[in-house]
Image 1 (cartoon, one colour):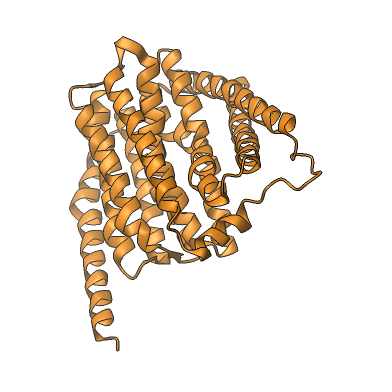
Image 2 (tube, rainbow, N blue to C red):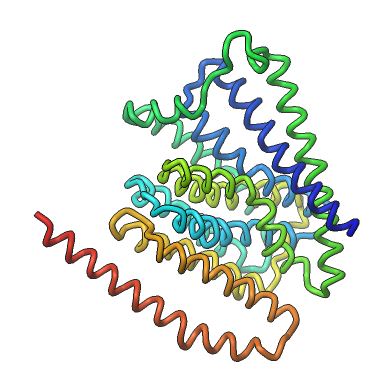
Length: 363
């Protein structure tokens, strides 16, 4: 019970800390004349991944590399399969053309790069430096690209991200700086509590830090993305729901693991064999699956969201069965690989062909 309360308290601290940090940093940036569009593409987008950064760095400092890496890989799988799945069940999601042509390929490229860097069984200091350098390049690219965005895009961000009103409580510089400091404090304390509770859970359940990181911690640190995407879907802002997930996944790899690799120093982060042999490939497969689904009619239908959600449940069930070396693991894997996966692939191919035919026949 004490560990559960610590976990919940840590989770609340991460969510509150991320909210305060984003609010303070956003208002501060707007006060210095930075456009809402740039703030949305950088501070707000990265702020939703602040819990993953805090937890992964905290895990590295505590000597738990499996928890640090599992948190990022698990979060990326959770973001696509669970968050997009639930959001699409609420309402079919619109996929912006830029996401298809640019952001999804970048997310996929970052995932493949991570696999390539860790094939030697380690994420080294230099690997972390490379990932973080690519994050800076990616951010600069987004800011430069934003200058050519349409007026509609600028107006959308301006409506969502408003400058601090004159005389408002968050309009003064000391208040904005205080929000940033307090937000960072909540993130640090929250991450310490969450990591501590996660380690206790792993010992009590008899599973590895990696499994806990891939499931409980990954879902917990993704709560800001859950709230943002589901709220956007309910409000009808369906492109924001998708863009939030894709951008967060890219930042998780380049930012979270980049910083974690730098913090690890000369020792680097050792990659668990199970992560390299299975979970990393699942993350890449999930990113790869986004391309044909996003390209088919530029929307994620409700049934596709249901498939995403079902596959996330199957993934978690597999992890639990494998961790416990349960007798049902063999039959479950056989059914998934021999029956469920092939039928899903065939169904999606048929649907894509039908959509292409309807698009070709349309006047």
